[in-house]
Image (cartoon, rainbow, N blue to C red; front, side, top):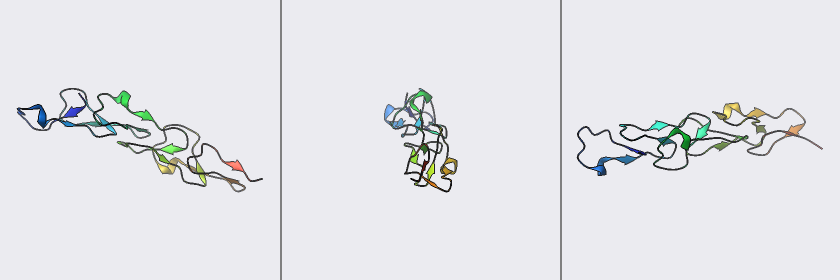
Length: 108
């Protein structure tokens, strides 16, 4: 588990390759499945979808990601599990947000 082979009739375990971070495979798979968008997998050789963790607020990830990206300065994301940078919300006029913010803050 945590590895795959696309070789038919493989005669050695050395032909089984570990799934890369952001993917996982149960035993006997010919491919690795990807973590869903909005989640990431940080370790190689994951064996189940439970290895995929939701991105926290202020971050996002496409399917198969090995880490979450931060929303840019001037944007924020109040919900976990965002699937793209397009989900980061622009700060309204009179407010600001640093990278990876979960909310905007009013200017003093």
